Image (tube, each protein chain N blue to C red):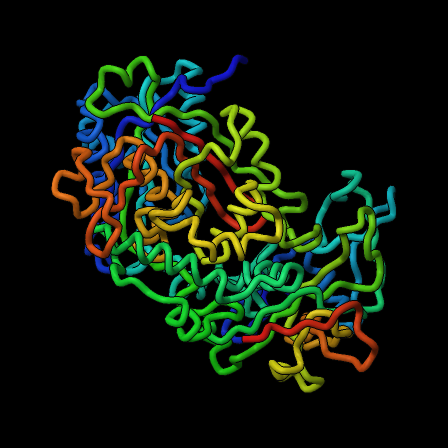
Length: 404
Length: 167
């Protein structure tokens, strides 16, 4: 098969409010997010004939959402998947269109991640019976995402001398970005001292090293570059996609070291190879911030700095607005809200359109001040290439490269 | 033994779960046993059906010493599971066993998740937990035919550099 670089585009994005009290079903939220993305793209009822979603038993299926929007689908598929599914589903949507199964695919994620099925693992999740592979860790009080990932973070500190103060700079950067985002749940800027002074969750993670739990739905619409030309927004082209890429022994990744290595090690050549670019060509990144550490580990693994130097890299200011390559310019999962990765792709699409929805009057139409003081602008000037680094677990990840 | 109750959790091992049923029953008999491939001879954990290195489906149980060192760890301050709240702060350790270290490649080893406990099954004090320290298996009985392999510190010399999280 020939290269699919630049043959498909993301043409519509949409999301509900980010909250901790949606008071609605995941179906109701998904319908709103898809409807907004269709409106964003300028697509009518005959404009979308494919739908995909991902979930972990906490969402709603495509064929419950499409009727509420008057859509008759030629293709739908709802997959079980956690973080890093956003990027991988962009590739699967391309595949469905390429195969002639449909022409335009809406991909959504909907969850009451705070008010119902808490993504952090308390409540309903903690009460589930323990069986199968979970018997290798859950009986030992290791169940939540933070508990799952902490030995990886700890080993990175041991091997490379990475410090809590260095990775705290990820939270500092993302809080700066959230202060420019009317949608963000947490808009206050924080300091390294705030992070280090917050209570312990699971060492080495402080409370502020951890992301939020959020109710929301999000949507991205993919179609061919040919169709994209006639739609409402400036098309954002897909240059390359990889996912969900695994490390060896992904059933029990601790058996295969170095455990401080994450899946990006195996994904980077796939995605950069398709795109025909290298890390130095990327203007904006969306490195999944389930935790401060996950952003750092992935930036390092994809070659934005040398392996082992991720701590110094994120502490250098390069990932902040005004720096060389800002990361998670919407505030990310740490500050904007937790969307299982979707919002980081949505944000990069808006960045490449020049239409970050910040506090600039006219920002959504592309008029920006580039004043990064609190409550102002978050548009990266002249952003041309954006990259998403999706994370599920240390051994599983995805990546996506976009250009305008 | 379909189900064992532990700290408010139902640990479910159905009759058809050949991977775990024998493992936990053997642990109740004070033996730490792993599946070893009948073709390439390498052991693996957790007790899976096929060999991760040669894909053979032929295997047998093989006993290991249960001695190793702490490869990485965490200290849980905020418990997720209600039954662990009274146990905080508690250490979860990744223990690398002495057997099969660095095989079949230099970065591979048999590693187990467990709690680091005192010999009366209380969580080990945080200041005593560090990468590199030696530990041995200690079996915590849950029911008549189910025990959890846990680990406790020994006074043997450490493996490599001893490192403890400074926070």
